[in-house]
Length: 259
Image (tube, rainbow, N blue to C red):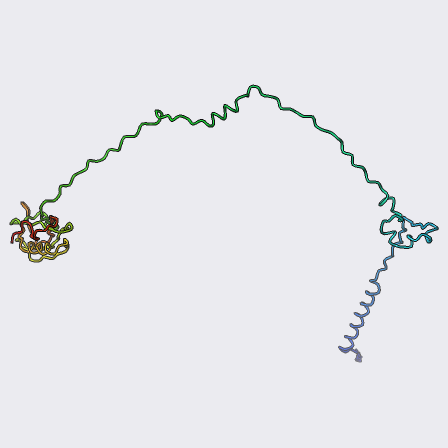
């Protein structure tokens, strides 16, 4: 058995590129040649209006100017339509509307004067038609606070309800202004003897405040009737309400002062 060798020749890459380029170029040429379409031009349309020049056109000077055909003038072809027409005469119709008189209203004669008098008349004052005056509102009776004529002592706080074992005589003070209350904080033991005092509010007169502190230290308090004291110490306020007298030329001596 004999072996036959087949000689197959192959193209190189460069040949393949040249072949493909030639095919593409041929296709482009065919598309360009066959793609052009010839469009048949339409037949020229004949001009319907013809211009005829009279035989003596060359002898007429105005026709030698081309503007004669574009602008209207007396020698042009449009003279009859543009320059030779007559303006219509304006003739307005002489017409006048006849007068139309308003009818006379005999029933309204004199009403205008009556309306004028009524609109300018001052109406009378109807006092009787006005409502009666309202009664004054009831006011609460005024309570007259009696003026303080003597100085007094008040006990407040935990010591409220206690009394002074021995009465304290409090004087009246002369001062230019009304004195306020002197408040002394007091701590007492079970027997009612003051063990500590402090001035917490002044009256405006130093002498009255000193007198109140001294009396608070000297005072001995006792609980009220039926009240049992369980604490060893009790505290409260002794309020001295002073009676103020106006100043005079007499020496400033406290009224009712007992050394």
